[in-house]
Length: 106
Image 1 (cartoon, one colour):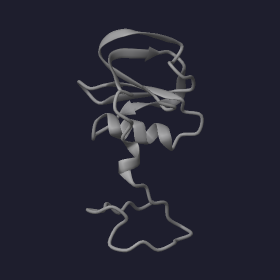
Image 2 (image 1 turned 60 degrees about the vertical axis):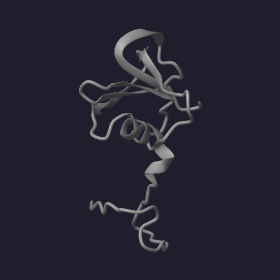
Image 3 (image 1 turned 45 degrees about the vertical axis):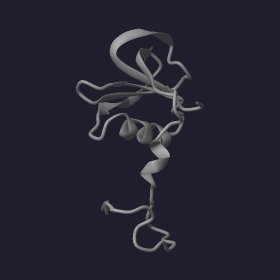
Image 4 (image 1 turned 90 degrees about the vertical axis):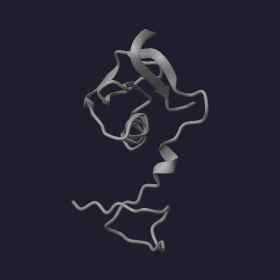
């Protein structure tokens, strides 16, 4: 498929298209306090949904929002690795350096 990046919200003008999906990246920003820094939602990974992203944790959050069954995520800021989780808090939440975690219901 094709991807058209925009330099303003909703492009120049918004119009319905049946063969396109538009995402406002502002929706990938969680409420203040929802990103738990130095904390890992370990385990409960969604199979095939761990990868490196560019754009930081907000890109990881976006991927979780558009993935069916994603309840939380863990992100490693040092290299951009993102793990999508099928359970809130993962399987075993724990303190962990170089990990940030987010519950999608926050």
